[in-house]
Length: 305
Image 1: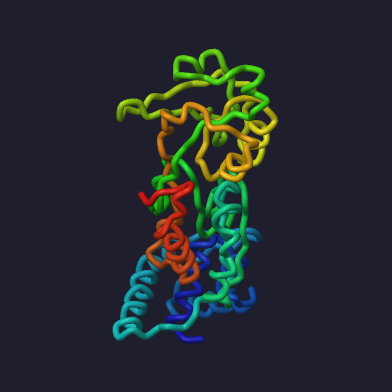
Image 2 (image 1 turned 60 degrees about the vertical axis):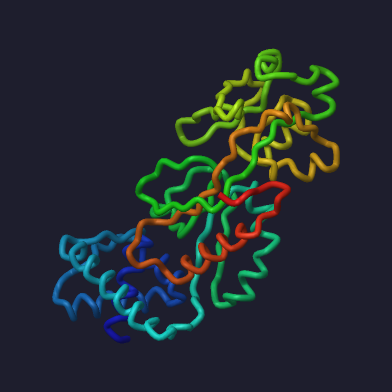
């Protein structure tokens, strides 16, 4: 194995936090990764990583060497692509996490297109609304709806999703239809909480160009998109979320939009990944592919932002 490839293995181990995850990402065996790091340490004359059974951590010398290694790999990549070369298809395992509200209607129906372009990538797709630690959980990239406050990640807004407020016909028959924001006081909602702090999300409406936040009296509090939609369908309360979550049920008449003259504040969709100088090729092509899906949006539920 040449020196540059050993650098690539070293950087991948650091960024994935373990030899096993690095082996998966590089489509190598774990012993090959271990031997590569041992050979590199012998060549540079310093111990670069502390090993444990589950994780690896940089030594003082390793931290210094990591910065230089990422610079070298970046320079090598630029040189390889200088005249349009470096066209080998990315390969290896790619771990992605996204909420069901994006996965089901948008991403999963088009995943076959991604595999047609990149058949050597093995995708591990997690579908959940729970917060994840990208480094600790070994995740390469996440998609999320709503504001993000994690400054340790590279984040990019790929679109904004229009928001609607809905109710089931059974709920409307029993409690009536709200006619104004003030009229929401007499109703109850399906509320959503996020994070370990269980922070409850306010509802938002745009009134005369201004954002108005409303804290709904809650009938139930959930933290899962499927549970949220199901509670609304079963008439437990009013609900407010991106239209894509409700589109099929609105078309079928299982849900009805209320306060249609007052749009909700559009919610951004973020793609996020660790702030690495050397971004794995499979992550880069997945991020680019996801962004491309929203270039020509489905106007039923999204707009480019």
